[in-house]
Amino acid sequence: GGGGSGVATGPVLIPPTLEGPRDYPREVLRRWPRGGRVFVRFQVDVAGRPFNCNIDRSSGDPGVDQWTCSLVVSKLRFRPATDDRGRPVISWYGYIQAPTNF
View 1 (tube, rainbow, N blue to C red):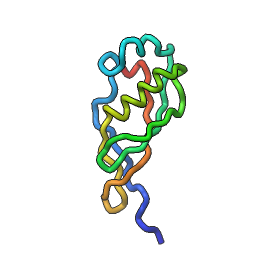
View 2 (view 1 turned 60 degrees about the vertical axis):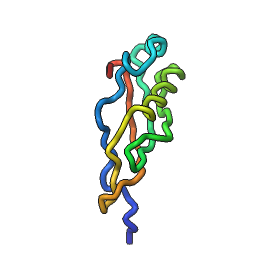
View 3 (view 1 turned 120 degrees about the horizontal axis):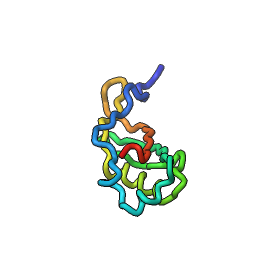
């Protein structure tokens, strides 16, 4: 039988999300490729904090990508995922940042 180690509910993002003019340096925003989106994947710990951010698909500018991961880890917060008994567990989360988000 199962040991109850699966994820029953995934993490839930707590607003606000990232805001360009407020969170990104002007220089990074100027370098953002037209139509570029950053697809990141990271883990959310039991306290709702992101860690272990990875770029799944680049915006086309490594600096934009790196800033996005850095901001995800420092600014985003979540209600953590829970197991089938309602206990918080570490889980993965995917996030897409696009210039249209701001």
